[in-house]
Length: 334
Image 1: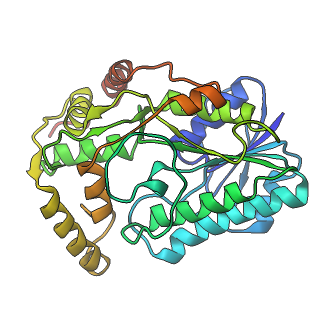
Image 2: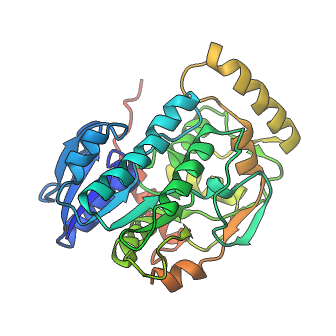
């Protein structure tokens, strides 16, 4: 089986490509810059921009299945930047698949496409909704998922996979940001820190996407549906942040910020950051809502339709993360 994996510059998609290649699949990766894979893993790389239909078509030629994970993430950027990568990129995947006769697509989405600011407790993957005025990322991914699932038909099967808060060794998003802010004594905890959230250890997210590759077939029970992927072990925001800090060996001294204050500060930051800031803003309304409200999900649909369940517990993942930090080069002492 020949598989196109887009977005292999990210930790998750790189590991998906490695997992597929390791089990013997012919893997083609498409991303903007050369990705680095373990020695001995045979993966062909096609460098190109997902917003170019010609580049996507070239990379997809001869493939049997697509795992589309290329995306613009984060909170920094204009609507056009998010739209061109996340929406136009998905449209190009669908268009190229139609023209080439590719009949199986696993679309990587996010639970935030259905998160509108209130708590999600034991939730299933409700349909994506547009109107996420507080986050271009969530809005663009919602539009993209809707288009992807609408493309599911009798000749092409599409499944949407929503991994939730993926973390693990090498993660620069959740882990990297928490550790950096803790080291700088700028770690904020929105609300009491008691909101229950689920997360996904990296190897579990990888195995879920591999399971989706195997499951997505025309007429399969998963075709045309979305699935939230998580460890199924809700923890409080406080515990998740503290465990990550403990694994990294950095002090856990968060500054508590009431949710109402965090939302107000986030709104202010959104207005002034484009003029005065560099890099990711310290807080936005979307981030405040994510940290201040519960969101955990029902794992049964993925178990039933994808025949997938997590194999690494959170505590095992934290131990692996700690071992990884111990192996990292230490900065020279002054």
